[in-house]
Image (cartoon, rainbow, N blue to C red; front, top):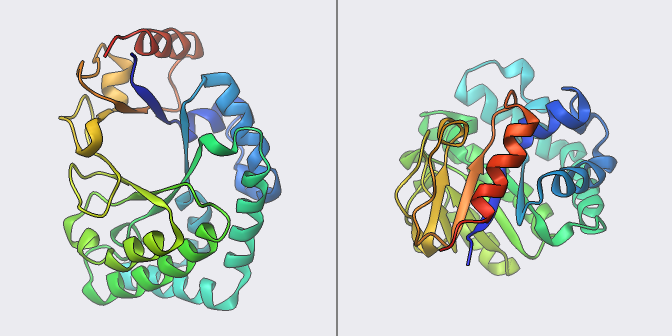
Length: 243
């Protein structure tokens, strides 16, 4: 049978369905946005990166890792961000495609860079965000952490997910004992990760890369500027592949 397709197509969906306008300007409507993308692309799973929401609270921090981590911690402490997360998760829970939507948190390194103190602060703030997500989303939660130092600071996130009964889908790594699914990073086509997971990167998708015949789960990255006709034809060819 064909592998399950995990579509990493947020930027593509925003460009096509919202003409580039940020869907997070209306958090209560994010479920509608995801339903439209699932229907359009026929996703088995649709990845929804929460980084796009979190960055709205980090703009003034610039690129400094410690400043970004402090800004996220402050946003969590003030409560508005967590309230927004809860509204988003509630909207996703009642979406018709709720079971196919996978919220994805950025890893600590995406917030704090390579600063050890910043990684620790970011990890604690992300833990509070994950608790807000897991309180409503009890299925699969993604963690996007290709950086090894950031992954080492993510132990508390795995424990929170386990306590909540959430399966963790890890992006950027081939193996982790506490993750259910591990999709390695790749621009083209990755080797297989844990649970038979493979990544077809945006370059590979725009080219002719095909999944490993033994892959059970394929993460497909679709760039914002890929022509819609090509996307639908390419996805159809991936669905038709016999594993």
